[in-house]
Length: 274
Length: 235
Image (cartoon, rainbow over all chains, first blue to last red; front, side, top):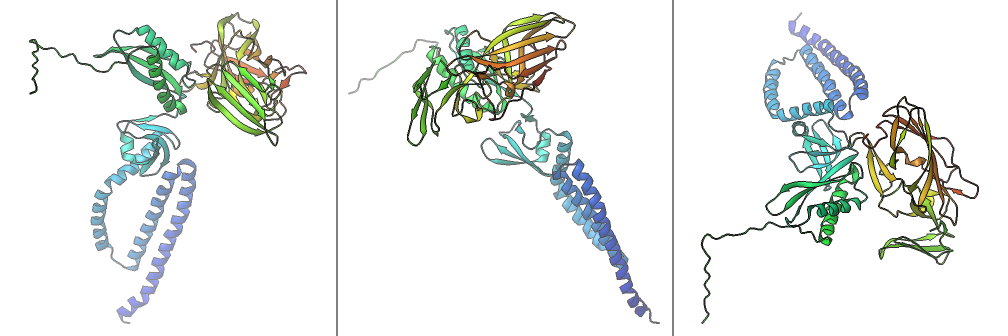
């Protein structure tokens, strides 16, 4: 019998075996995927569970394809070399992507915030409500109404202030008064302005004290607490009320002034116009 | 100042609030509240009458900001171990204009004579936000609350404040009068930092109107709140 004809007769059998192997891997991917999916669904948030499931599922399918092709007789070594090169290129290119994925995973473990939490990222001007956390990035709806997408890698390395856990937040101002003004009177006027505002809490109580003796005036530190959801409203409202109250009480809010001193008497000349 | 129908009076002045109610066409009433010359609230409602009623202190400065009330005594009370103390306290109330004097869901305007204040009970990290009330000696615009404090601990306890759920703050009043009865409060001091506060609806005489929160019958089951952050001011 001609050897070529034997090979020709074997080929369909090889194809059947290869195909069967692929189907076996496919079924395995489906079954294993379902078990993994059910497990992840219960224990891991959806933003991590889905990509993890996809990775496992497609890895099994890829192995199935490679095994099936090898069984059929297709040499994959050249394909693997090419794949290796491509892998290196993709690896370099996806370094940051992978870093973000990993950071997303660590953020999940660390849990510095959840969807719905108001947060502030230190060193940036970004502050708002977390609307979505995906594998790669986190979306924040800023107080200015703009949605910010921040890569998880950046977020993981940043100092994050989570404001959701607090019942109340402290508001702080620096208010300057003139050196000739009565400090005690100014403190009482400021306290009264705070007490007249419902959003300023009674307990913890407001505080006003001399923070510094500045170049232009005595600097008072004003501190009071407001309910977290009303913090910004209280902050903006009360500063205005303090200014009005100080004006009414005749207490000056000084501005920077410089006294210029001349070593020798200053001589002024006036030209007569013809 | 007395509670009751506004149409009969036409205009009511409560400290710096001028309240005006005028009957309009098609069973409507024009309502207006003016404070310091500014119109604070203005509404036209379809109703037979409007009523000035006392309102539990649970909605100002904004509804939903807090779910608890903190009452601070003007003086700290010291109670010996295994002793009971009974006292009657007066706390300031808010006022409401409603189309039905028995139902808080029919309120169209709420206001307060003093600046409504809030305080944190516990720490700012894990405490609770409360409506802050301090006991006063006034007769009008207040609710009278009967408080029983039972010191069940083995040591003398000093108590300066009580915290409980604001929804348990039920009141009843008599029309054309200024008398308002608030809930009955029982405080069981369990230890130096722990007390159980039990709040029961007021015992209203027959001529009093008990104000419901949802138009439904009021059950006399007590509300309980556990004060685990202490009951002294610094707790």
